[in-house]
Length: 152
Image (tube, rainbow, N blue to C red; front, side, top):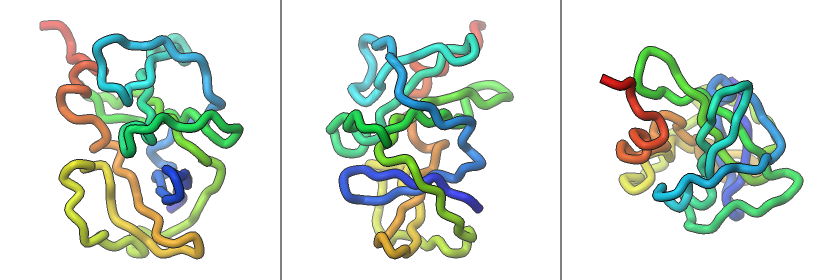
């Protein structure tokens, strides 16, 4: 399997590339009032409105740094209904790919109750690299706000 590597502060994380639709440069986002502070905004991609979250701000409370290596990564998010929707992630230093077998990852040994999106870890020359689970990024109330179900 291939993983897109990125950083939050000095720590390394991995995103399964099978969940990645496209990696873009940062774009100007329209702010969404009355959302969680880590909801960075929304933008139009191929005539589809795509909500964007800042993963650094979600994890640490600090917005991502605007660097050349900071990217907007669109992932397939399991939204209400039969299909997935695009969700944008602002990721720092998202510029490397890593190949690993799923069996190379192991449980971190920690309770990630406050951050259910944090998955298993693997060893690397960079240190521990932790997988991020896309389907667990949004708490139910934010998911309902960003991806409302069909009108009844």
